Length: 418
Picture (cartoon, rainbow, N blue to C red):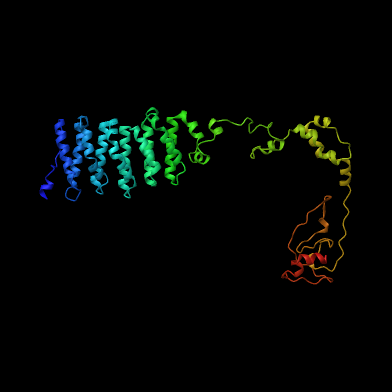
């Protein structure tokens, strides 16, 4: 056990030549021939850290034969990526990211060795590992561009039915569209259009939202192909992609304006007026010319013509309103005849003072002496019933008001009696 642990030194080793690279890479390949266990996983982790250091500091990717050494380490690196040990899997992710930063576009030479495993890791139930894998792939694409990775991503999008995997793949496709130019992506544009069509109506809302963002990036990169691509889409697919109709996209507007009164009938133009606007008040000259005065309507004199009345000043008009006519003055001069007191009837005390021809209401009194005040009728005043004076014909009223009788409550019966 001690010999196995001491088989690989736990220290940093520098690479100064191609021979040093060949020796150390063969040494790591021999180490990974063993199966991962509790005894040797730390040695695996330290070996991968050395390769990462060599790629970032010693530039071992410049030596010939480096890609062949990575092909020999393909299986150990993929197994480390899928390891349940977070420390070992994180080191493997960091190694691939360091290779992408160091190799730039040349990383496409080794991308096919590890990309299928990374896509499969999107479906892991451990959300921490899934997020780390997605962040690693997106960073690799940003560093190395890799326009050729668009085709395998689109193929996996159409084949894989896992929603988490599909959503992660769409995010990676969006990164590919962002970091590359339209000229670099033109070779794989057909695969992208087929993926957009197939995924626009996906059952997952996250996938639909991601593919809409992907379509927006596609329309920005390839504006000349958008109209032809939209023509091949069905109505439902265009609706899910939120593609505007032709007339809305072109910005055309209706010829007739909404607020113009010439294009609308009279009833519509009136009803379309704002509710909060005040009505227009006609002028004084118009009202005086069209509306006859109160004194002219009620006096015996003939009515003046509109032209004559409109020319009279305001002061004379006000005097004509205030000055009484001859007929009204004669009527007011005659004294109003005094009305005789009504003859007593066989009514209850509470109905005295009211006419028997109308509905009787208890509790009202009318003073006949004040029915006419200055020749004008006076309104009846509601008063509380006062205690009546002793009389021979009427009995003395009780001090306490009796409760309402049936005739006071039942109005239908009361109407029949009246």
